Image (cartoon, rainbow, N blue to C red; front, side):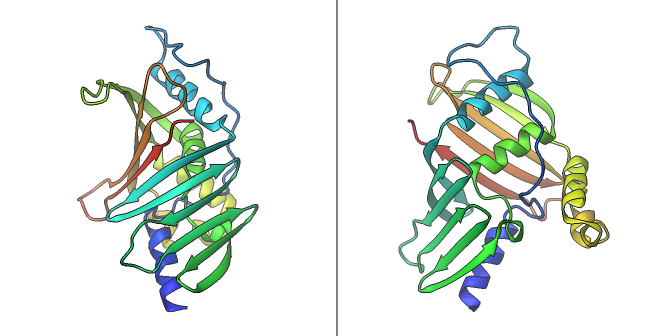
Length: 223
């Protein structure tokens, strides 16, 4: 299954060593749409928006990674992704329970969630709530009127979570060391009069040099 393994490796690589399965702590829930105080703490505002997005039982989204594009749907903790490229063999990834089914053309294989990196928006949103280091407000976008926030995540805390979850073999390996050599920056855009988020952009940036940069963008459909 050379083609399938190539796609699986590419999908896992886009998020480096970020792997689902971490235990996320409970954080305060947000308020209703449009409830933004002028003196509201940026982190509190971000968590409010994240909570609103997570509260949606079902929502559609699109995912762009470099030149690859997918359409997807999040349904609770389960999700699905479908490639949009017509020139390539179609790729479909479905997560149900603890199993991920990866289909590339006419080839199919089943994987456990811990064999994959983060792909669903829910995984990323929960990771931000668990590992955010600082949050900064961004200027409004004059093109669409959205407001924005930037969140920087602690690479050390991410590495600690992964080491605790994956055990000694991970803590002593190259992946664990690599997890401390980059920073993870999330940018969120949202419409002030609507609940939830409009889009989420993730950048993985090395602490030294430019090699290994990754950019991933999710766009959320309106309910």
